[in-house]
Every structure is written in structure tokens, then in C-alpha cells.
Length: 116
Image 1 (cartoon, helix red, strand yellow):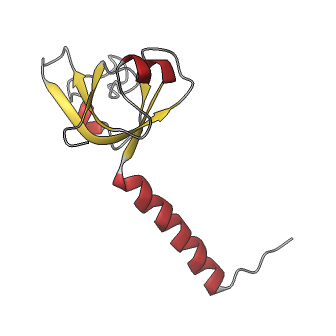
Image 2 (cartoon, rainbow, N blue to C red; image 1 turned 180 degrees about the vertical axis):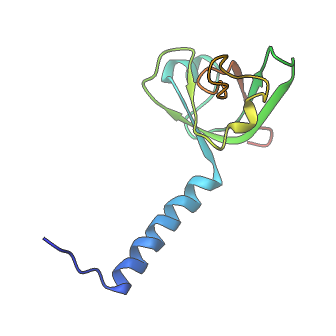
């Protein structure tokens, strides 16, 4: 079966995609376990900063403006998306064999932004 999408239909689809992208870009999301959110005195939808702590160079890196979203992930873990969190990864942090960045396990702390 073939679908005939008029230019108007395609424009509406593109506008919808752009609106969702614009909304996502206002605040990136960080998914945390609901109990971890409560334990840290944070709340759903609150805007936070993510700080990485890399042993390779000892630097702390910060990704700013992430909105908390409760999600059923293991306690003590956080999930976020790339490339928005690339800033948290040290250029010296890579897998020995493949030399790909170690972006699956980054020790972080989550702090509330000021002025929330």
C-alpha cells in the first residue's frame, strides 16, 4: 500500500517534529529512580546540573539545565542522552582495546540549579 502525503501533510509532520525538538532543547532530561529523587530532596521536573568526576584527569565537568524525570532504573543510577552529556566525558577516558569513549559509566553528582 502506498501513501500519498501532500506537501501540506509533510509540512505539518515537520512542524510537529520541530515543536517536540524545541521543547526537548529547552531542558534536557535526566532520568532518576523515584526513591533517589525523594532521598536527595529533589522533585520531578526540577532543573538540575550534572557534575562528572573523572579519575583520568581529576577534573569536574558540568552539564547544565537538565530536567528530572522519574524512571524505573536501578537505584543510584542516572540516565541522560548524548550528545548533550558529552561534556561530562574526559577525552582521556576510553576503552583500552577500541579507544571508544567510556560514556556508559560516568560517576556524577546531581545538584539543584540556583534560582529554581
